[in-house]
Image (cartoon, rainbow, N blue to C red):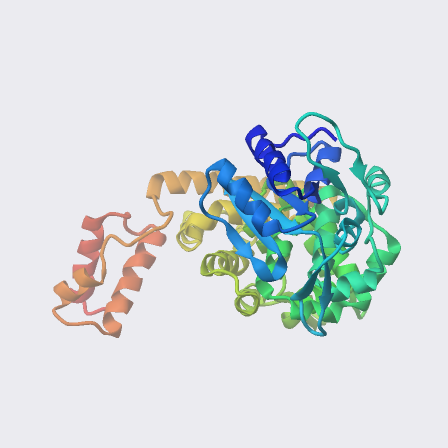
Length: 463
């Protein structure tokens, strides 16, 4: 296989092979992507011998002083031109019960490739500057690539039990590459889902966000659900499944609706955090579902409940404060534009949406448009027309009133100075009166009218 590795890296690896006398193979994702015609970011090499010593020789030839070594795992990494070059000794791995940290022993290239997750990642090729070496394919990975199949090299129960993160990787590859999962390899996921809890939430989240960022996130989430991994990780989502019928009144399957919203959002945005918001936007419905004979199915407060639930999910998954705040805000506000679009759009309602949405307003509107999933053509046309009117009104009001990331022109210090007293509940109440006046359009979003109102409030003792 003629490689497309950076010539300087290739020259250094080939020279190190001659110096050490250890055979070197490029393996894994690079081979897979090369055969698929895709670019590869990093390079993984298997060394038949001492990988740490080999990495030192390569680093020296490339003029790199820093080498990241993991002697216990016989692994070393060199970074060159922002490319990670990883070297590992051909090895076998054994896992103690309840652990993902392997006991590593030297082994043959065959044994090394057999321990890999999927056949399409278990191919290798000798590294050469001048000739094309044949691909070493012990497990028919080339055939699986041609058939777009994901299959484990060995017994999938063993593969997943030893490293449960591979279950997430399986679904991630299916989502990213649009591959089918071989039936035995997929069925084994359901038998091993309880093992996922020995994996750190950080590693799980990394795979989960790669699924959301893929070209087909709906397929990834569907496979997570079908394998029961979704129920293990996010039961709040699987609780949305099912069609409710009472007194002949039917309500749609909210989980199917959620997948439709995720599909719509993935066509208009590649932002993983917005796709996450689309996936989570209705999680509060399972907890707020109620049937009334005079109203049918209701979900009052599902937006606030959903935001509250997401905070707990984010804490459980150790997601960043930025993700938590962004997604919870969109969940909390996601019904607001829909409610506004159903009525005559007022400047006051738009001002409040801009004020509360801040920098999230554009993404909020994108989500709300994606949330329109009705199959009724007349309703769809009406909803989209109303939504377009709201979008136009948002632009007009924002240009006029400058309310995105709005900060009142009068702050707490101003109020305390005019009032002649220190902090207290009165300060907050006065500030709210001024903010409401601006949002209602009673005064402009400027300091002079805000100060005049402040003085009037105090003189008229409206506090």
